[in-house]
Image (cartoon, helix red, strand yellow):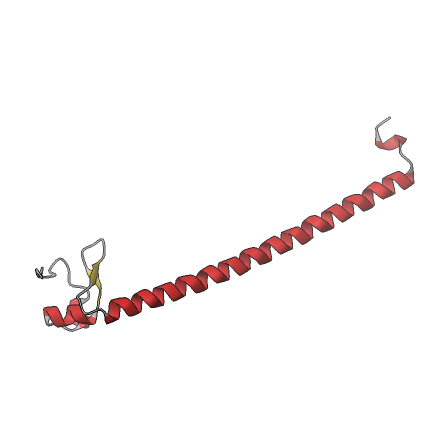
Length: 105
């Protein structure tokens, strides 16, 4: 005889009900966890966006020239001061490959 064969139907029924409660608790905990993760993801996205906007404002408003070059050597970002320093429009500067003039300040 197996262990369950020695139990009464009431005992088995009680165990099944306990297992169902445990499953329901686990499902509720999983739902809560997913909701918490979603809230945290949204919070992080908002923080990231605010940080990007703040950085963009700083880079745009600084008086000194600032530019970024991608791995291929192309100018990928420049602020207004960089355009004024080099005497080119942003459209002219963006995409320049390896020809960014070096200016000592």
